[in-house]
Length: 110
Length: 114
Image (cartoon, rainbow over all chains, first blue to last red; front, top):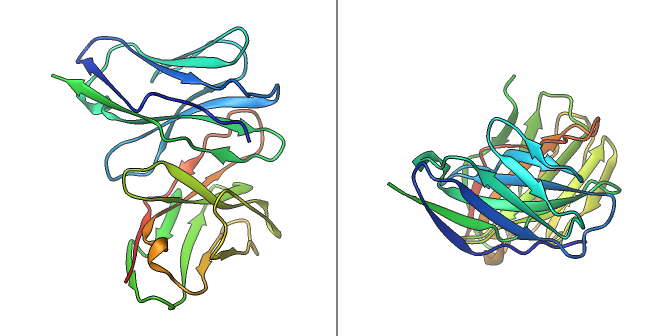
């Protein structure tokens, strides 16, 4: 199973953009890149996903490197409610397995 | 829609006891899965299913059994609980149609094994 590598923690000031990196150098051509976040004492929630092209939705943007070996989740204006653990996951389209890594704990400073 | 529901919310077991964690979804999702999350750690996949009658192992399947007799339900059985199984257990579901495959997670079951 392809693995992802993320920094353990990051900090951001409120209302500033946040770029959360993820390395996935062993990604296969059929793997989708998914991002989830987990607020304290809750189950994970979906943020965004992509395959090859950059993606935008109401929560965030996903920038995928041309060689697909890395990606970046972009929160355009961090709020205190965005403080969470963010997980970058490769979904195996063949088996549908989702393998979570250890994630990045984002701290947002007021 | 209730989404993904899990029961119980909390459970304390003694070593060697057995129990079943319940998971149900009302979204007609084909894919269901179980994860465990140890304190300060990420989620690890235990078992998953792509449809009724079909299950497969994840990263950490030992000590757990699953079955999928209906689309809606995906129970997780601990045959002989051990302290190493103390964790928070999350159930999730998603459709296999399309490419989004957003997983919906339940609220979790916090299990302590003494």
